[in-house]
Amino acid sequence: MTYKASDRLAGKVAVVTGASSGIGQGIAIAMGQAGAKVVINYHSDAAGARQTQQQIEKAGGEAIIRQADVAKPEEAQELIEAAKEQFGAVDILVNNAGVQQDQAFLEMTLEEWKKVIDTNLTGHFLCAQAAAREFAKRQVKQEEKTCAGNIIFISSVHDIIPWAGRANYTAAKGGLQMLMKTLAQELAKYKIRVNAISPGAIKTDINRKEWESEEGRKKMLAQIPYGRIGEPEDIAKVALWLATDEADYITGSTIYVDGGMTLFPSFSE
Ligand code: NAD
Image 1 (cartoon, rainbow, N blue to C red):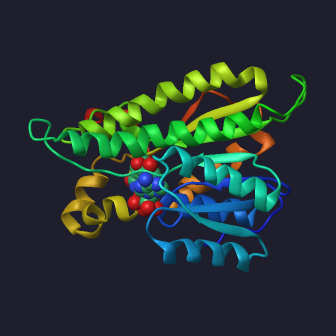
Image 2: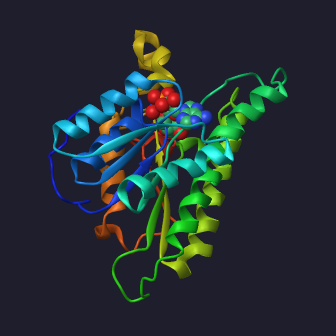
């Protein structure tokens, strides 16, 4: 995964959760190659985190690695502290960490429910709060065309598309939608921008079983009017742009990056 090295985020510090694989890895690399200093968070895949770091360093960038479970308050806080200690500040939080634990609703255990809600919703709340408390200390005048800090949630098209067998996942992503909007509204006075990117089907570990089989791929493509399964780069490019001042007037928005999955493709014929 290589992006054109640039200075679009020079002088900025980004924390990216779940950055040892998939979409988070793509975003961390894109931001690092655009000049941001990056805190690469991983949960269990240290080797994946090192790969992310190597890609950033190859482009002349700087990144550190921190293990943390975003669902644990003190560990979420430590990610923000690490950015401050190592790089002197934090400017961008990409709340990306996420899991799936699929189960028919009638069979779903409280543990399966909690696992997904804890990581995909509570973990995002904890990291956002830790970052926002830092951003809120900054004095940026309302009329300036730059922000005091930037929070990007990686949500999902399943913040609006129901998905049988994944009540935990859709509830978390639907919850993120209102968490994002409420934070955008509440934190605008501090000049903190808060937005979400909702990916469609992107080739990563989370859905590997589906896109690796011919039948699974066909099923996925039937849901994608644009006719291709997405790659982490498709999301990373949007996240990078959203983190720059080019997107300064955008807050409280969800950008669907989904090849048209949210266009009700089954109605196209
Ligand atoms: P992935 O499995 O490659 O990445 C998920 C990452 O989150 C992993 O690195 C994992 O270690 C990390 N993680 C899990 N629990 C964690 C915890 N408690 N603390 C810290 N990190 C933790 O899959 P991905 O597709 O790259 O997923 C990234 C995000 O994108 C998720 O929020 C997912 O819901 C969302 N998403 C993915 C797709 C897709 O099609 N791939 C579509 C929509 C949304």
